[in-house]
Length: 287
Image (cartoon, helix red, strand yellow):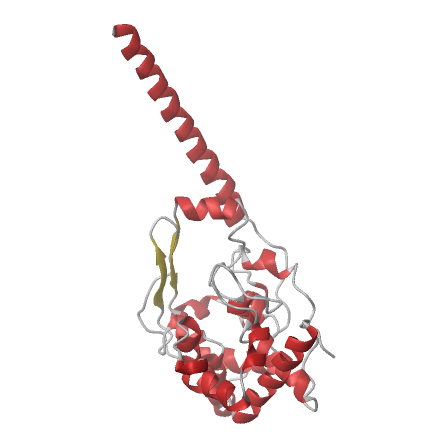
């Protein structure tokens, strides 16, 4: 019995030591990814501050989800709290932007690179990278128009399963993901198909992926599914979040009511036109 207990004690101690070593390796390996810096210097971007730009930026910030994640007063929200995975807040922008120049904000929004050179994780820079200078400038003007107010502090608490996801490549920094994305030409104001592509790439890719093929993690479909919708049904989906058969589509319904309802009729038509073409050709880089 004594020999058995001694053997059992050695086994348990060895297993505990292995677990500690594995946990230490997991932390170090994942933290190396989290702490990685990206060498993209800020450009020469400048945002306006006139009333018309701020008013235009208000609508764009709503359409593109800034106010959904950071709150309508931009003081932040408790964005994502998954036990064992991660707890992330969308920080108080009324104070956070004070630490950034316009050029640094452009780098953060388009390239996912924060003030210290590390990458953002949740903010969809992979989508915002397609924003035109004019649209991005209006959004920055709107954000800067808010007086500094107390709000939610920045928090990124990566838990064990989240660190496993980082090490295995399931969760990737925004700055790293951008390098692997397809090039999308700037919109041509005279071409409805080009305008539709721009609106889709700056509003749909966050959930449906850079190539619009859907994302298993969020259970979002390939956007070729839009071919099943009539024009009226598609408009109803975008304005009221109702799918075919009057179905509630969960995340899509929430996003439609909060964000896409602010698209104009012309914009919804352009989006529909582009997605119809995408469904036929299966490519995001249409001429």
